[in-house]
Length: 402
Length: 148
Image (cartoon, rainbow over the protein chains, first blue to last red):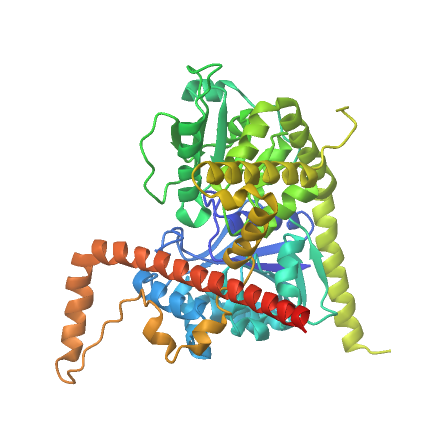
């Protein structure tokens, strides 16, 4: 099949969740399909400033066509319109304007879809919240597959989405919770699959990477963008409160550290128990995940936590924010960790995981078994192919009714 | 626990949550809330407040519907720049946006963040009042039925 994948940013060095998901899926699809990535020249997820060259290129096994961003995001205007839209006070045109302000505003990408969408058998769109997917999908609706990457945030309830979610020919969801958010606005017979994302079995991690960084046991790990929107402000408060109340009397010289690995989008307090590593390479990432006592995921909004799956891939237990239904659902389905809603539950759950190392190891092993069952590439790709076959079957039977 | 026996997160979390609630109750009793010596009372109060804070849509409340003008009581954290002068309005707005706002942005963002927190707290308090009013109405109905 000839497939287009429409995504707001694309590049090997882009850490974003849906962008990374698109890249992995596209690379695996390219093993048996002709895949073109349709994207923008943006790299920065806040401003959408132009970074890559516009035009056609090739990255690995996929063709890439990039379109320039005509207007950077005006954060003040975006925040103002977000407040109106999220508090249910916006008109239909203001709701539509929200998607323009969110960007990345690349009208040439829409022109490309108008001219070329028919050349593709299917056009896959990632993340309904971005300009290209929101305005591009209606252009190619007769061959569109949407991966909404929807989260339980205020945007998901806006009226404009009722019409939008009825358009795609098929859906690929990341979790059952995400499907539940969207499903009541989709026609009942629209083909759909819950795929998550594929992972290869973890390789043994190189512990010397940690020694080089001066990181020693025990530590808990946060991996990803360090941002208030990811719940990191609350994580820092909870951790500092936890460490004030629970000095390690058995070994005061070896207290629990919080290791933060990822780009920083917020001020982080200077504290001897908080280690900031910034962006880390793949081998360091694996070593951190494999040797952490616990991976902490404080995000209130997620459509799928790849980091959580990676931690389980290494047999590491997780501690997640229960206010995020997706994270709590993943942990409960996997029996792979614990969750919290408050600082005291954070402390209680963390105490349990630190004090019961055998139980923590078992939770991590159960997480790995869950990844083996659900998230290996052959399983994920088989689900995607099933969806493609179902859409094709529906298309043919619509064109040639019996 | 044997290696083959799965460790279920659901029951484990129930135990941890119960332990945390128990710690909170004991702390409150110790610091002057004797009503919570009765575990059932504590649990009912906790469940009611928890539902007000977490378990409901804070945009769906009766009290705001009864207030005359919803804009008057609701905090508006946004700064909407405008000018009533038809001729010079454009230039004034330009100066406000491009000169004044960047100069005062730190103060604006600090205030906006606090307004947002206050707005959320107001909504939760309204929800708490409504939960208590509903509970009171239910109890009154039961008492009336018993008196008859």
